[in-house]
Each structure stands twice: as C-alpha cells, then as structure tokens.
Length: 176
Image 1 (spheres, one colour):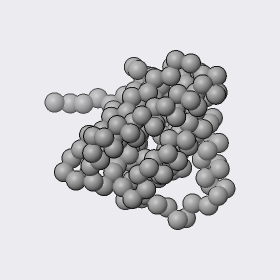
Image 2 (tube, rainbow, N blue to C red):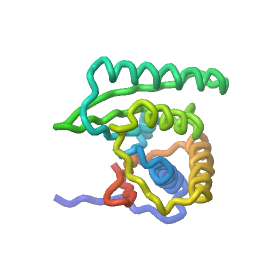
Image 3 (cartoon, one colour):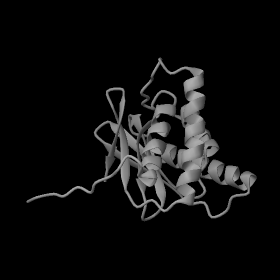
Image 4 (cartoon, rainbow, N blue to C red):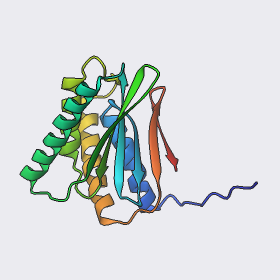
C-alpha cells in the first residue's frame, strides 16, 4: 500500500500558524503533555499527565473548579458561547486530564488561569517537563506568540489536524 502525503510549502500560513501555536503553548507551559488541534470542531485539546489516579470525588472537585473558573473568566472578559470539556482517563498508575476548548473563545489568559489552578490543586501529582534554560524574556516571547497565533487561528479556516507532544525535552509536531 502506498501513502501519499500532501505537500506543504514553507509559506503555508495556515499550517504554520497552527504549528507555531502548539509549539509555543508547549514551550511556555511545561505542565501540558500533549496538545492537538481539531479543525473540524475548531478546538484545542490539552492533556496533562498526573502521577497517581485521583479519586472520582477529587476529579469532580477539580473539574468543577476548572469549569467554574473558565466560565467566570469568560464572563469577566465578555465572551459567550464557551465550549469546555474536561475528562479523566487512566493507564496503569498515570492519569490523563484532558481539557478541550474551542479556539474561538480561548485566550492566553485563560490558559494561564488553568495552568495556575492545576499547579495549585495538583502540585505533587502534575508531571512537568521543567526547562531551566528558559529565561523570563523567552517566556514573555512565547506568551506574545500564543496571543498572536490564537488571533490568527480565529480569523482563518485551518484545515489541518495537528498534534504536538513532548519527548525528551523536545516538542514534536505531527499532522494527524
């Protein structure tokens, strides 16, 4: 069987913006294990890895906190029509907390809010890929890129599914 891969040019702005967004989010927020973009539903799926599996009550408390916080943040920002889905799955002794958000109402500030809440509530459990070489100005640059790429994604119709993962301190991006 022969597989034909579509050819992309370096100036394919839609693909480039999507790739840059996923890379910037993973570089800026080492707590996120994987992130993917689904153009059919126009959403981002962020997956966080947890050591140990939270009890159903603990997960429900975290889910409620995240949902209520995102909706409150959106209300303060004057944004309506927010779509958020929070799921927990597990494999062996690792849990995966997945947050699905629509790109049209997602903001850099909201991502930072979610990360802060997870750091507080899951401090010992949240698996993080620390990068000590990142300096404050690098982090600020990544935040600016996230802001710009999110705005670009909201204005364009992107047709390519993408997934970005961490592996040995690197960020890898693939077409799905």
